[in-house]
Image (cartoon, rainbow, N blue to C red; front, side, top):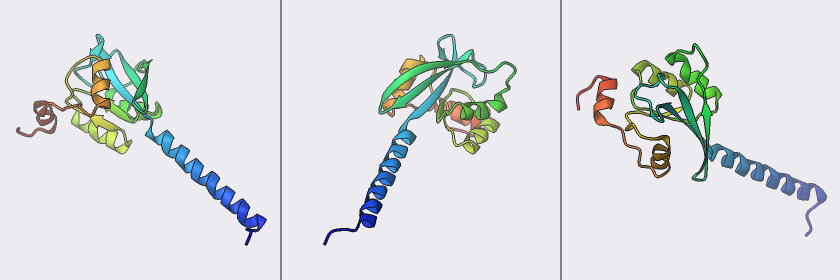
Length: 146
């Protein structure tokens, strides 16, 4: 029995929808990672940096861009600014505890207590799942003992 033209067109529409969902999933996989920079290295304090290096990552291939912070912006406004830049993840060393909750509300992943290094080395560690937080920095931020 041959499908009617209506069923055939529904099957084609379903294929288009599924293809669209697949493409949407592909887009969501792309990450934009921000690293605050001072003197070509990760800034010691989040919000006190010269600029951000933005890495656009798609299937472990990255492109690098530089983003200057808007003049006069304060640290508590940075999570919103980064969200507007399409940032999915931030790599940082020290972050004020109150700012951590702002990142969570913006659904931006925050990697804290990461060793100070070049952005290239940090993004390679990120891609390889090797970013490690310094337990002393985490304890300092959360006011807990090791």
